[in-house]
Image 1 (tube, rainbow, N blue to C red):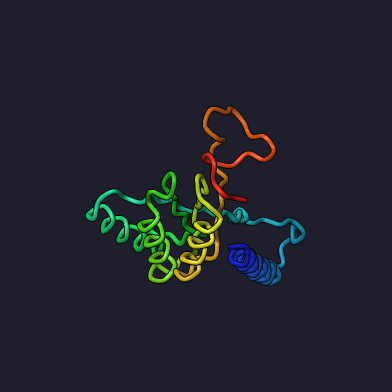
Image 2: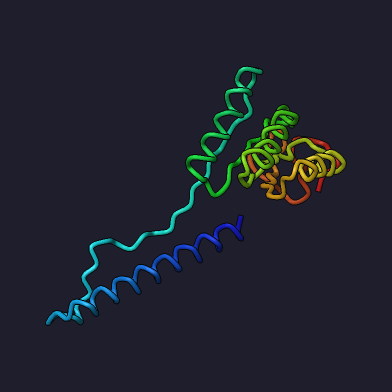
Length: 167
């Protein structure tokens, strides 16, 4: 995603340089008294980036609709990336990975996978990371999750989601 931001910044800089050269050439050809006054009718373009966040649907028709929507929105609107959320305790594991893989492979858009590690063991986390890699997803936002049950905040040594073997 960082590489994509840097590439877009270079494109914008090149576009601005091109516009400045054209504007300067136009000014040189018109020898006016006020040559040193820069009159640009177009405000400088401000680089902005946006993404879309998708939640795994609960039904097969919902999945079909969302896959079509991801394709269409990615093609027409060219987001910097799309994020695919993760259900509590991995409840949407297969659907989340299917959506992420589809967006990465077929919609040709970078994916940020939300990975909520609540209640997961190290082995489960490693397995999910391996599945994401095999799906072509390399951008992952790993979330620790909620504090253990019965606590309002985190303390040193606490484990997310109860007693599980996690980092």
